[in-house]
Length: 390
Ligand SMILES: [Zn+2]
Image (cartoon, rainbow, N blue to C red):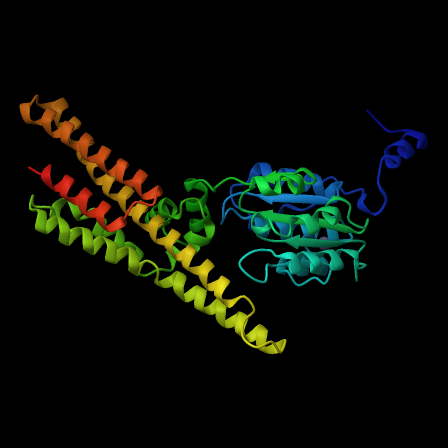
């Protein structure tokens, strides 16, 4: 259908809502704005469409490490660029780097987004943009905003025409239902293992390592990035693979192996701890520049770091268990292969044993998710696997 007369053009434009409306080029925003967002085809398509005809508030939600912040910066570039997100101009570049004055990133000052944070956001939303037609207010960790939510609601619901909210949340707690209902939701999934592996290989990581890091990443790019530079990662994987050969049927040896595996999980925390202390140092520097005594909310930040470390450790144990299960699965496949060739009587019993071992590991992994006591859990599992050796 062609648009041949001026009248229909007016009709199309008449549906707009002032400064939020922009006629974007057909191929704008450029793909390059979302180059850092991995394996989120649906979310990126939604954001590109949104940039051509933006509304007042977006809520990007999904698990940590799924690329929400990169995507939010890409959307901001598209909204601020005079050319609808060319991906090349100075505006696009600064927005992607997070340094454009009309992209305001609000991070919580303590353990949660509190009422003071909400007030700062409300004040900032009223200001006029400095360079562009509009400003983008990106608020992170909105899932931690229950106390701030009432103070934010009215502004998010109806910001000044030149302000667009881009809220970012790991999940959507029921306490935020009202705010959530006022935004266009853009869901992000955990990144698939294949996408994480491809992303690592694009960055020059060799195939085998990319595959195992992807498996251990739990669909989190931030975790993959740390693991790939973690010198101990390959060693930990080998230690887990060696477990079946080390279990000799004695309870004492099972206990030794269990405690070594827990020790490995502690070692896995080193790169994360290093990143945490760098972040704390940056906060301290910031506090010093702004003249405040100590880091505001330091205890909450440290508590948050401890929570993340516990999660990280559990993730590492879970990956170890998956690695261990794969050793028994390989045995099962080998048994089935040899069974094809010669109908040995022992192979059926061997296959049953491998199946039971894989099941026991699966149950331990589920118990880990339920916050079981890790030492008891690992020791019980090793004793169980050990009792099943030949
Ligand atoms: Zn541009």
